[in-house]
Image (cartoon, rainbow, N blue to C red; front, side, top):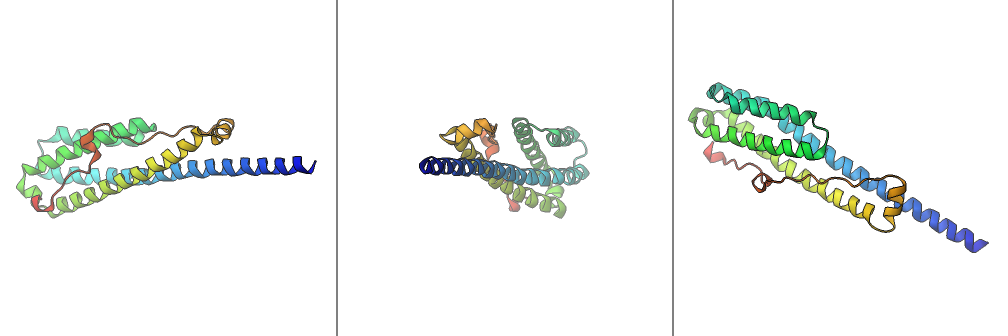
Length: 184
């Protein structure tokens, strides 16, 4: 009887340990996503300032500025990760088009506000890259536990679901926009 009690206690302790590990991993994924979300919001907050600055110099380039604004609104409303990742990819591309527009306007390139916005944008893009790496690492660890024995037994019982990676399909978007301070 004592052996049975010891085995039951060891089994119960293992279940608690595995469950707590799954919860810790899931919370790490959620915290990592929150970090990405903060950086995306920083970028979204920068977009209106960038558009206002560019608009002062390039009034006739409205299509690009409207596209950036619409993408920002749609991304903020997106709740599903692949949709949000796709919209963020489009935002980076549209912001890149704004940067290219700046090349046509020497006065804009010389504008201190524009230069500061570009510096901030580069900083934010680097933070997004780091946050995405951290998030994807947390997802990898969590998914490995959810899919491997004996964790997957409890993961199924307690309905832990595989987390989605934050991926960017376009290879050109994987890098932060290249902004050379001497060119601005």
